[in-house]
Amino acid sequence: MLLFSLVYAAAPKAFPEMSRFEPVLLVLGAYIAITLSQLGLAYIRRLAGVLLGAFVVVDVVLLLVLIWSFHIQYMQPPSFSLKAPTLLSVFIFTALRALRVDAGYVLLAGFVAAAGWTALVANALAESLPDAVTHDFIEYITSDRILVGAKIEKIIAILSVTVILAVAIARARGLLIRSATERSAARELSRFFDPGIAARIRDARWARRGLRRRHSDL
Image (cartoon, rainbow, N blue to C red; front, side, top):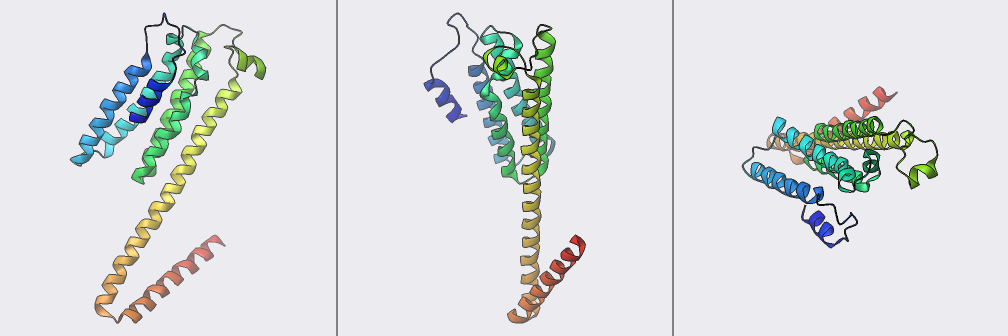
């Protein structure tokens, strides 16, 4: 949040001078308050389960509300908001959830982001003129027209990154648990056997597990 605040303060403002509505300042303030709340709850070890899931949803929804508000700030049609590069921050919020090494929170953040972006596209289509949809890429880039395929591509990108990251976390979590289990078992064996014998028993168990995995793959 500090980094985003510094970038916003240093960047030249491109919105009209007559616009008195600056949603970025409001959203940054809200994010700072939410972040401090999460840090406080984490410090007393209360940030988990449903509460953490709620914060994940709030983080992503607040970002999407910010993106939606751009067309109000710049006094443009709703389709204008769909061109905002701020959507890329969705990947930051999704990746941050990977630090907990729990695929569930990553999936929650990614799916909420994909659903929210779909809602923004649907709102823009509903609020735009009947001829707002275009199939011309140049016209899409240089106007407020909507290229539906480009919006669907962003949804696919969000879901793809989310699923890949969740699978990687699930595999890493499984490996971490297996390693911890093996270390615990090795310590227990060392209490009753010579270290060399304990090591051979442990290696034999790993070999049997590897053989079973190869047979299951076949």
